[in-house]
Image (cartoon, rainbow, N blue to C red):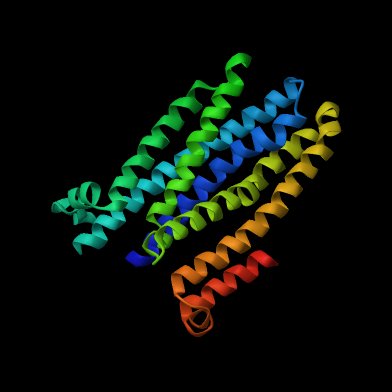
Amino acid sequence: MLIALLIIARTAQIGASILLAGTFTFQLVTLGPAGRPANGDLHEVERRLLQLARWSLIAALLSALLWFWLEVANMSGLPLMRAFATTAWQTLLFETEFGRVWQLRLGLITVAFVLAALGFAQDRLRRALTLALFLVSAVLLVSLAWISHAAAARVQPLGLLGDALHLCAASVWIGGLLPVAIFLTRARASSLLSERALPVIRRFSTLSLSCVSLLIVSGISNSWLLVGSIHALFTTRYGWLLLVKLAAFGV
C-alpha cells in the first residue's frame, strides 16, 4: 500500500512539474512569436494559462508534501499517522539527497507562487514575469533528475543529463498539449487569434516532433544506464518495462 502511494505521489509531482514548465514554454516559445501585437484575446489566453499554472503549483505543493510524508513513513517503518513520532523526518530532510532536493523544490514552488500571485496586471511586467516563471519552472523540473533512478546510475553524470533532457522534452510536448487546447478554444471565438492559430500549431508540431525524437534517444540512453547492458534490456522485468515505455512513445 505504501509503495503504491509513493508511486502516485511521485507521478503527481512529475506531472505537475511537466505541466507547469510546458505551460510557460508554450507561452514564450510557441505562442509568443505568433501572438504579437498584443490584444484583449491574447491577454485572455495568457490569463487562462496563468490560472492553469497556479493549479499546477497547487498540485506540485500538495504532492511534494505527500511524497515527503510517505518517504518518512517508509524510512521509519512506522504507520503514516505516527511517521513523525521519531527523528526519521529530520534525517531524511537534512542528511539525504532526497531531503536536500526536496527543500530546493519547496523553495522554488514558493517563489513561483509569489510570482504567479503578482499576476500580469501591467503589460510592462508581463513578459518579465513570464520569463521568471519559465526559469523557475525549468529548474523545478530538472531538479527531479537528482531524485530519480538516473541519479543512482553507474555513470551518474550521463544518467542525470539523460533524465533532465527526458523531462524537458516531455514538458514541451506533453506539458504543452493542454495550453494548446486552451489557445485553440479561445481562437475559435476570436478572428484575430484564429489568423495566428496555424503558425502556432505549426510551431508546436515542429517542437513536438523534435521532442519525441529526444524522448526516444534519452529513453534508450537511460535504459542502458539503468539495466547495465543490451542483454539485460531484453531479459529482465525492468528492461521490458522500459521497452514498453519506449514503444508507447514511438507510437
